[in-house]
Image 1 (cartoon, rainbow, N blue to C red):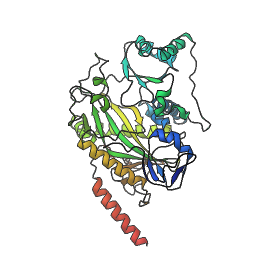
Image 2: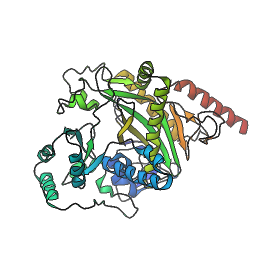
Image 3: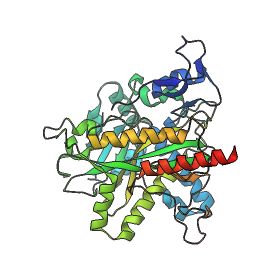
Image 4: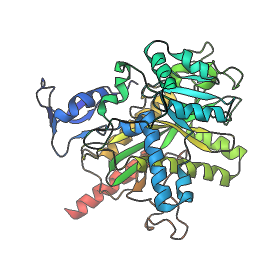
Length: 433
């Protein structure tokens, strides 16, 4: 199943000053279309589009880290160090080349550790490499970027700057899919997690789906299904140049000589959770998934005040989470256009259901009441505050045995739930008419 690319459904949106593309009510667009057309498009109240205007505040690696660092400082000022520590779920990160001097200072404090370089706005593992020597990043890019690094080494350190537009957010000209147009490609240098949790000796990360319907107020849904993506090659730190060891992206792994196209390299999250339950105590597994929930909420809160919360917009994010040997989860990145291409029948079914349930939550037919805590495979985890798992319970943490309404990796009986939900809605509609 291919990702819906520039798919438009019958719609009441139209582009100003451009050739008319037809009317539509719902647009599943690429971020490139959004950048070029959003500001020139008139949309009726009911029209929906699948990206927020400046989605890149969370989905571009350097902006994500800047916003998380700023939010952590804010929490420390307003709520203390204990609350701020809840944001300690991303590795030490520096933007290159503008934070090169700060990076060198940190690098020299910890000689011998492994770092990973990532282009800030590429995907599918492109441009990523590991290194342990400063010489490696100087050799990484000759020409323009190399000269830039050389000139930075010759200059005194100064505070990094960021381009900000009049709305107070970062300049859209640096959005996800403009990377190749930049004269000097920005990267992030990040401490590599050297002790990942291994299954069968192999490294993996988790892909989890979060649907945001609004930022003001913040209203977010968590999908029950997702998957663990495995590397094909056993993990070792002795060969940091082997991408099949260190990168779990399917786009990378499927080029491996021993990749099996039918088996793929994925586990569904239910299988992964069952595996953990067989190896660790129920309390340890619950604590891990609670910390993963915290990553979703804190990362969304970090951009809540900078994302333009347009009523026409929603966003289906693909979160990439790594777990280390201590069962600590780490946020690697957030994707604005998570791949909907299937690598197996199981993967196809997951993504088909994910899209169907996304459309149910977006609710173009206006069937929902707005009070639902579950729609298909989606559970409402935040509605201007945490949502209680118990029906009828107050959504106030600290009241009794409050449990957040999240079921990541649990049974997803979505078909039965949807039948019951829509049957109940029909009864309510008949009773009120």
